[in-house]
Amino acid sequence: MVIMVYTYEVPTEKHSQYLKVTAEKIKPFWESRGCKSYDVWQAAESRTSFIKTMFFEDMDSMQKTKALSKGEGKPFVDLFYSFANDISRQAYIQKT
View 1 (cartoon, rainbow, N blue to C red):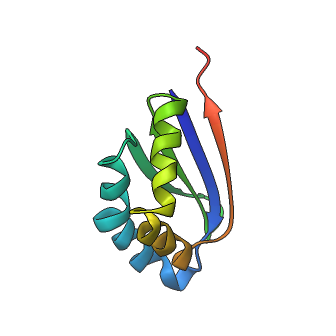
View 2 (cartoon, rainbow, N blue to C red):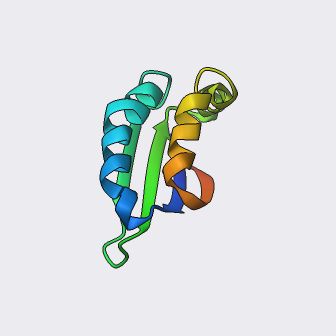
């Protein structure tokens, strides 16, 4: 398993719209194209800090799905970036 973890900020006034768009558009798109699970979490101690996790079967499926971000997935990436800022990401490979 591979997990891609994004950390980012979403301004408070955009939370409701961000969560709605994610549930209705962004999550279904990625989960129908190789992502096994797409989840969003808000930090318990910060009103603006979020993480999202994307689980993949292996590195190959992650790379194939990630490649869509320059093609058919670009509108969904742009939509995410319209809400999020101070974004960082890191991939982790399950070892046990």
